[in-house]
Image (cartoon, rainbow, N blue to C red):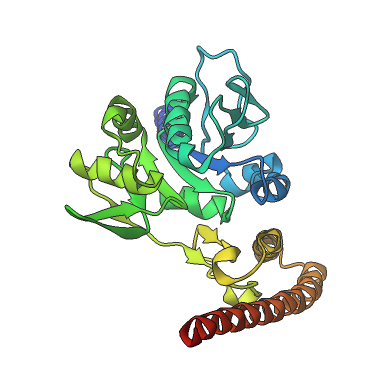
Length: 321
């Protein structure tokens, strides 16, 4: 009787391990794609992205047991050192090196759609993944939260992002913000197969939304946190997975975006460790940067005042004449 009981315990233990392995391998594999340019300001922030949330050691700790994408067995390339690929145009040949995909496409604003479509084709051919999250250099991604966000998502017809609207003559287009959107593998395949229907007259995220709308694929709205200034600890919603900081939209020079990136990273790291010394460093960092931002805000107000004054004088002169 005891032998049978021990055998039963062993069998249950074996199948429980097998079941856990099945659960683990069935988790969605998320690939993050960052659109980049080797021109300012993107080239100034990429080294800091590589040292913060993109860093291999950070990604391994943040993701934990979640599986990240790998190269397909048919590929001769090495495995990804991070679940993140930076893609950029302007190369003489298409190549992949150190988690950067160099595209043989002109690096103009007008080629954003071409870059995105070429990257979609390349990842379909080379990478084993379930879902992508395409974002930009004006973002910080909380890897732990984003993997948790897609944990129970069925990776079929999945198109998700903060919803934006664009008005055309024929009607309104609802699309996902290009600063960060999810696409399941099947939708990327559909997009590539229907790239001849892409409206190149529109911005790439609007055109993507229009194409998917026309194909009957619905957008699932999601959220992110946008910063219009330097973020202190109390400003950050730590439940978010995507933080955006396009500072030139709010009157700041874009090199300050590096400071926002570092601020968010420091605070998320402190949240994990709760080390007092790190808290003091954050306070000192914040005091310095808040003052720095206020100085630039002051100069921006003065500059706006001068430009407005000049414009008023010009208009007054034309009226008097």
